[in-house]
Length: 242
Image (tube, rainbow, N blue to C red; front, side, top):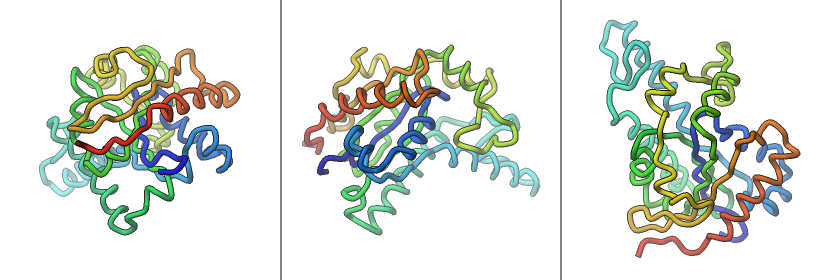
């Protein structure tokens, strides 16, 4: 592991600031990023492209006169298994990268990004992640209220770039249906840093508070993000299942 995180699971409500944090890290000098955030050269595995792909595939199937497989006509998922499919695709992508280069995470940090709502959304999602991810993982939760999530979701949406990671958005009705609640407070016990047990692994976590908003101002974002990542680094110790 050295002085870098191997894998960071970056989570939070829609529009909480996950993509903005990643964009900030991309723009940070390599040496500074490693010193302040313990993040090396990094690669991203984000489930949003998988989500968008399901919409496109279903639209194409419908055009061919076939039934939709993943979503309704108004793009609600046809079952909870679709959410798990996205996680399995994350697992598969991680596995393929390790198969090509077993030392892959020793040379760079992997940022795994997704959002989940509901009474057990994150607990269930963490339990679906592979051992290969969990034994290397640390979690950063970007904390905003549901109301702030909705405000920022409306603000960022650009219809001309609806498939974009930085500019996609959800209608208010879907925000309420899928994300009005989540289980982070229960999982974290209201703590700002600690460890969460997942299938025999003790996964470190830290919370980055983004309300009032910091991701709109690099001068505010850098110090606040550094504080969260340093708190996460302080939680690190071997996480291999016993």
